[in-house]
Structures are given as structure tokens and as C-alpha cells.
Length: 327
Image (cartoon, rainbow, N blue to C red; front, side, top):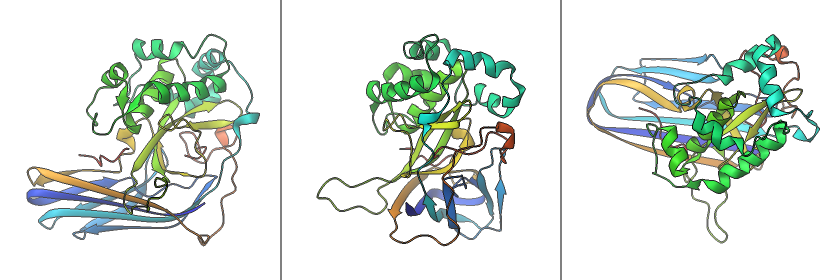
């Protein structure tokens, strides 16, 4: 699939901002099944300085500083890219989840995966998360089968409810009330797997959505999306989307991954003055009819040998004061 993705974020401030320093995770990363043909970032007012960098997890970032006084900040990201379906997970070697949880503690060849077993700023292992997952992860059960069922279980037992949570809502509250948005569901999945001793990472991106039958597609009606991934020995990272009970394919656009939302927030920063503010976000994921220029992705899965990955923290995805549009 070929897409154009436009992500527009606008901050309106009560009083002029005198100095703003911002960090954006808005450019999708290249993966074995995702090729970025073009990306541009437009910022108004024009930044006094701006630079593109690669973060610790291999994600694309942009740092920019605005020194001119302003009561509105507008950031527009535009990307043209191609996404193809990843390798099927059906041939992934079978292994009991608890056997792998024990293996990953001592296998030095998996050191780049091990770091996704630890607590992170927004997701901490807890006995309540472990207890919730245990009915699916019975001793000796195949890891992949358990993850696929757990993905469906979160989708069934949690209610998608916009505006029911925000970035400050504790994970324990989401688990107790069983409602939230995709960001919450991804955090629940990540927290449960880590509480079992399994690696799990949070993925930020976009999802192509279709309008209801008979309705026109609304420009800007899409939103950022989030899902999770765990590692299958002999296969690589397996993405799963509990919000939609699917394993991401060519309709999921990966922007980046990390330990949780705080590592890949679309836009965050620090400002001097400004007072209260209002933020509005619009995202448009449009399927294109023509192919993007440049070489197509290979559509291959992550190397089975973790040490062969070019990105230190674990290679590619299967699909795969902050911007609040985590749907």
C-alpha cells in the first residue's frame, strides 16, 4: 500500500510564548516492510534552529527551537511511504512462554531484547498485571498462541472510550475500569507481558481507517495509533494491536517504538511563558494510487539472529506537554 500521511498539530497559547524548545517523533522509520519515500516537517513560526536526529531506539526525531514570541505554534508533518505485508508468523518456532521467560534472563545473545523486560516511566510490572495475564498464559503454553489470544482478550474485555483517560491516568486505573484508548490498551499489554518476564515494546504510528458505508471519507478524521510487540525466538518481533484485535499488516504505519508512550510522543517540549494553552490535532492517512519513488521494501521479517540487526535495541517491527492524539 502507498500512503500520504499528514499530521497537523496546533498549539494556541493564552499569552505569547517567549522561548520554545520541542522534540518531535513524526517521521516514520524505515523497516523491512516500510519504505519512506519523502518526509517534510513544517513549523510556524520558523525555528531559529532545527536538526534531525536518530534516538536511542533508532527512531527519527526532530529537535527545534523557536525564539520569536508567538501565541500559536503549528507543526505539520507530511510523509509519503510504502507499506507491504510482513512475513507470516505461522512458521515461527514454537516455544513455551515460561521457557522463553527463563531463557531471556540469561541468554546474552538477547541482550538487545532484554531491556524491554524492565520497567519504564509509564509502565511498571505489577502483581495485578501478572494475575490478569495468567489465565491466558498457562504454564507451558506456546508463546505465540498465548499472545494472539491475549490480544483478542483485551479487545473483548476493555471498552474503547475516547476522553476517558489521559497521559497521567495510572495503568492500575485502566486495568481496574477496563476502559481507555489505544495508548492505554498498548500499555496494558506491555505491562502484562513484562510482569510475566517477557519483553514487550510500545509502538506509535497510524492506522488507515475507512469511512462508514455510504459516508464520505473525512480529511483529518484519522488519528495517531498505538499497539504493542513481543519477541518470538527464531522469528523476531511480533506486532499485535489489541484495540482492533489484529496483527498489523499493510494498513499500519509505524512511526517509532520504545518502552512506552513517553519514548515516542509525537510532539513534546518546554516553553517559557504562554500560560494556558489549547491543542488541536488532525491526522489524514490517505491511500495513494501510484507507487512512491524509490526502491520498494523487501517485505522480510527481522533477522533471526538478533546480533545482526542494524538498530541496537532490537531491529525492525513486524508491521510496526505531548500530542494527545493516541486514539
